[in-house]
Image 1 (tube, rainbow, N blue to C red):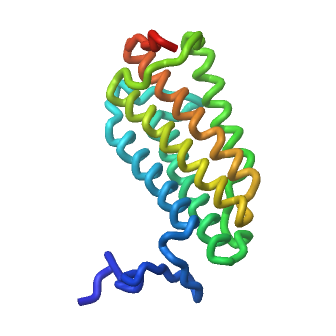
Image 2 (cartoon, rainbow, N blue to C red):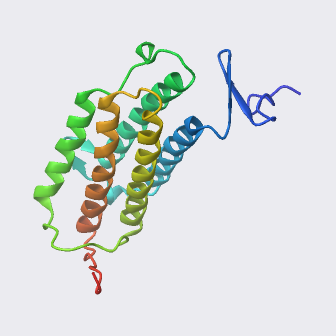
Length: 191
């Protein structure tokens, strides 16, 4: 029976893209998998936003900011897949400096609204804040994997810069969500 949910072509542990077959143990699939995992987790974060938590920053709601990140990650997945399978990434829309600059402007706007950090902060707080903290960790892992992949294949410098800002964005968003919810940040006793 034919289905759109599987092809069966990868049953032998290899994946086909165009005319090239790669082992599913390839670093390419680690990078794509980490990008997909983060994107999926952002969907979990979006589903957890309560109306009172959907604040506006830079004239966008939290949900719209997260959709911006999800769409950007799809662009990055296309770039990574293209270069990983030996195609030119020039045919794919890439992350540009405007996307990184937008994230930086969101981070700066949050930074002036919440108290400064004087110590490490224990992750958690509100349920949504905790989810955004977890997104931060996934973003860091994904960044490490894509950087490792970029040491073998050419990933654009702007994409790497975008990935480096992404975890900072999630940290800022988590702190802002917790601040807006009135959740006091907890500092470790032994740090």
